[in-house]
Length: 347
Image 1 (tube, rainbow, N blue to C red):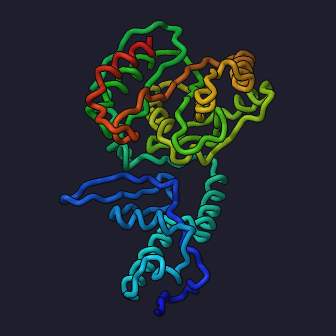
Image 2 (image 1 turned 135 degrees about the vertical axis):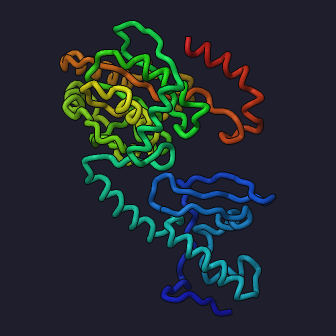
Image 3 (image 1 turned 90 degrees about the horizontal axis):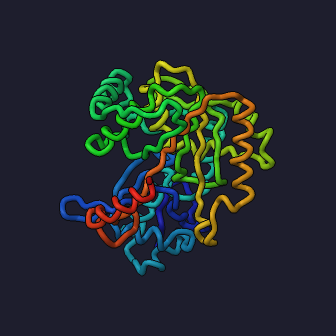
């Protein structure tokens, strides 16, 4: 049987595996099930739906099968069908959805370009909130009306607000508005935004030296404070710019801070918090880890020396339950129990 593929010698090439760092979501459309694929890292601009059968085939073939033995592995004598599969595989590779050398070379070039940037480009505009500045201001003006201000102590140093999608207006706008309005009169010149790291975890705390941008403009990252913190910290601080690139947990709070604190002059310190799974696995606590306490104590020393007036913004969701997160039950059935547990944790 002859395998036709113009411009490529496939005889010795392994079929690359599907990239593991993509988003895979099961969807139903017109009574049929599909796997919806998108790239949270932004290397691929394509979003597409494939059948569960083709998805299973991709998982089965990747890095285990050469192109020239595909017919034998699949037990197909129909060259047209085999060539059609190869064309589909090559199309996915052309979209940078396969973990091939072609993709790795492309990723290396894109990462190098990104690391040379002084300003982090926004990642969520046009998806979670409007990208057009005028539309965005109207969007935020409307958001503001959904919440109410609570009078707080004048010396408040921080707040907790989740990073739920801004596009979920009925769910999130009242919460965001109430929180940010309530702290808007507080005096600070350094806003430390602690965000959950969803995509990469290289250390307990991962910093960025890039300024953050949104359609409302650019906000400066306090690199002077970072340098001061490093001076007091016995460990090398971790700078993971690539983890910050696709991350929404800090970007949402930057945008809302630009809007609600627009009359203040302040800089930000964006910190992604890595996984604490090791502590859970070992049945331990972060405060028993010398490395963790060194980070915290050195931060306190740097803060004391700097004379900065600080505000902490913890961009932190609470429990994640339901089928979306791998549970075999619907979240709605557990909401009352979850609310009680969350309120205990908050108190």
